Image (cartoon, rainbow, N blue to C red; front, top):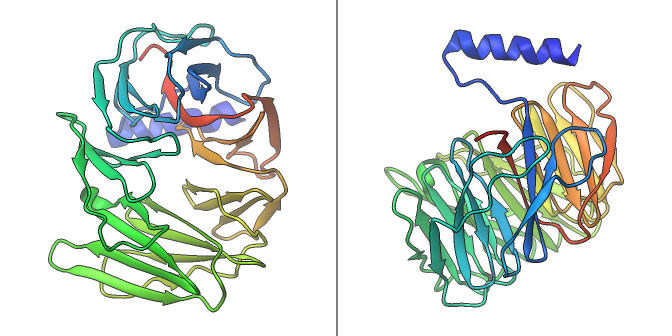
Length: 320
């Protein structure tokens, strides 16, 4: 049944001229000084191989359509060409094609993908962007930004700033014709904040002592608006966009909020997550990978073993 649904998606993609989603994928995850590769899917499976980099992996990502795996180490941003690989072997280990010295300690940093740029946030107001076409680190001016500001690349790679306040958040976005700035009052003390762009919509998740509150915004003069009832969570570590909603994960579990259905609450912790083109959702936490089949109405959990301290998560098509 699942294969038939995927085949129908492939036929739809062919009819509309869009690229066909690959069905055979590998997952890449950072672990210590290695990038470890696992076969994708719900079945329990060990690693098919790894790259040893000689430096700790802080984060990694791959942009869809790119044949490079971007890896952040404590002092460098690296891009490794991807070639070969199969469901039983990793891509060929080769020297990085891009190696950018950061000039700062980025051992607690993160990477974010835009459409034609990457964003590198090392914390403490040390933020850069890098164009993909001719990679070079370009400093972001963070002077005057509040502590805890979250930096994102929005539509057309416009730099978005979301900052927590005592009882809400501020949003600053440079629009095409005018800049937008909003202050949102959430009515409760804010302990943590996460934000994510998806399909032109920004989702902001605020963690309070008793719940997580969601707000959405699309570029324009209207301020961010509440996105339904608060979630039964008290921390927020990951926002995973779905085709018909969102998955919000934290230390105490996750909530799936999809249109036309009731919220689904689970206690499995989530540090990061992603959705692959063949409609599986991968949720990573220390020593555990949980896989959800998004075509399964029940969204049954499929647990798999994983590194004790996963850093970054990416998917890549076999043979790319």
